[in-house]
View 1 (cartoon, helix red, strand yellow):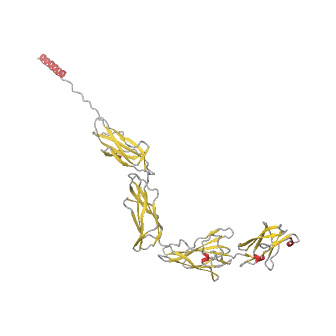
View 2 (spheres, rainbow, N blue to C red):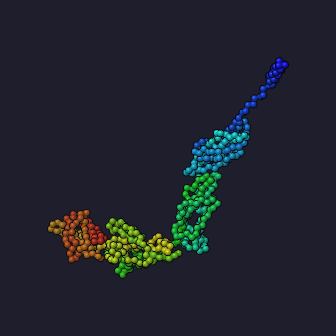
Amino acid sequence: MKQALSLWALFAFLLVGLHLACTPEPEQTRVVPNQAPETSISGAPLDSANAYHRYHVFWSGFDPDGEVVEYGIAVTDSNIVPVLRDYRRTTRTDSIIEFTANNEVVLSHAIWVFAVDNEGERDPTPDRKYFNAVDINRPLPYITDATKTVGGETTALARNDTMPTAGSSVRIRWSATDADLGGSIQAYRIKLSTENTFSEIPPDSTSATYSGLPSGFYEFLVEAVDNAGAESLEPARWSWIVNYEPDTRFVSVVVDGEQLDLHAGQGPWAPCEWPEEVPTIRDSSRVLFFFEGNDKDGEVDGFSYRVVRTDIVRCSSRFGPFSVFFPEGYISLPLAPPSNPDTLAAYFTSNDYEVFARSQDNEGKTDGTPPGFKFKVNFTPRLRPSALFPGSGAVIDSAQATPEGKLVVRFAADDVESPPVAMSYRAVLNGTYGLVVGPVTDESELFFEFDFPPAGQNAILYTVADPGRRSDSLTVSFTVLE
């Protein structure tokens, strides 16, 4: 029995082995991974090349074991590598892209494209092209129209036109052009000269109105920005003035109760070139000035003055500052020194002067072209031609020489403020300076001695100067006989 069971077990074992030996092995399945697609950009500029900012770019993809179903495209600065969220997905294979150009911050750009296949696999090495975007022409803004409305009436606003502060407004219209192919205006930037920064507005906003502006000078500025981000080089401008400035005029100028000639003192002459008709007053005088002002769109509420003094020797002018404003329409000058305001011992001394007066209106606007009144202080001494020896055209001979062989030159001068003894004199004979050798006589004649001049034509220069440094001179020719 036990032997029978063992045989049966051996038979079963052999039967199972035989079955296993006759059963074929299962077929081996080999898994092949999906291959990523490849991407190529075509029609783009060469690397580092310059290209117009509006460019038509093409791209394509190839998948060795499937098909390309879409692309990812990104445009960045040339030094930026985009991350996945920077790409936009598209099924297109071309696009017209507008790049920022002529910009101080962004010049170079990069185009990145990767293909995506039907299994969602994307090209791990996107194709890239980078180049410099340029804009050939910057936009050009210009003012098309400027009007002002005053008291309900609208008229043209000329450049630097003036309008009152009350009941007035200004409207400015503008436009811009861009000469580039496909160029367009993307935005405007506007501001008044009184504002610190430009405000950017959309391209369909082409006018601005200003009203209630306080007194002052205004300039409207507009810049344009095109679709390449290029800005206009210079803004278009339009300027105007709010509040008419007051006008000022001298009414009279009085010295010692006598009125000076206003017309003669208001000429446009340059310093040291004033004609004889400019009023002259005595040395150490005071002057009373009367003036008035009027304002086209307000009231005059004060006056100010300044004094310009010209040194009559050096011909250099010293400009004093304008004074503070005061309500009176007159002033007596010079003012007493600040160190002793109670004294009246302040006078105009020998020099040339011009006094300017300006008015101020109720809005603080001052007369921008204040009138001036010119006058001279200290009358000029005058040589007395009849007292000159030798005089002009004189003929003398050696008999008129002194025993020492000298020629005695005589001349005299008159002055309003100074006696002859208070003045200084000089004679120059043929370039040789003479010295005073005798006192002033009762006839106010001065005497100079020179070596007797040679025979023939000679010349002598007579000069006199008063204590205030005003002077007179005269050159005469005379003949010495042999």
